[in-house]
Length: 265
Image (cartoon, rainbow, N blue to C red):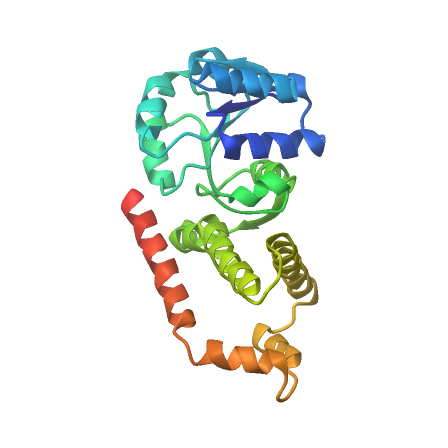
């Protein structure tokens, strides 16, 4: 099977890296296309895959094409190559905010379609990717998409109606979580910790908490109360959070990101 990347930015590179490291594909089974010669040179040097500067050189030879261009140029890109697609090909789009209906209008009737919302944590092989297929998808297409994105993290199939919320939560979420992490680090520095120590303590606490909750399945509210010893340090801190508007601010943050996703579509 031959895989093609239409656009080879950071997200595409993260997907490519996961596929190669998991041995889902070999370098000789991948072609990466990008208009930037510098980007093509880097991908070729780092991963030993073939590269192309023009999509017309790549699409006819690929079974699966991963569309990873900016939302602002996706229409132009697809219209330019729509006559090259075949019914045997699967087109997987990771373009933010662009629905299956839009993709179908631009690429024509021939390729099978899938839409995926991944996040940048794919670069650490701990990504979160949600995907949806057109009606009556092939079982092997669903399995292949799960394998591609599962090579770099967790995968979830969802109806497309949820994708604005997915985009806000897991797509944009890494930035929101990093912002909160930065606040914790700055607060620890003000308490006297060296910056390097504060960052390590905060990052590892975040990682450990996330892994524990994911593996245990514990109710988050019950987990918080379990950590809060009566009249202890955690309870003292949580009282500040419970009396603040942090919860409301995070809800507004997600709502704003979801709204922008709807506008992009």
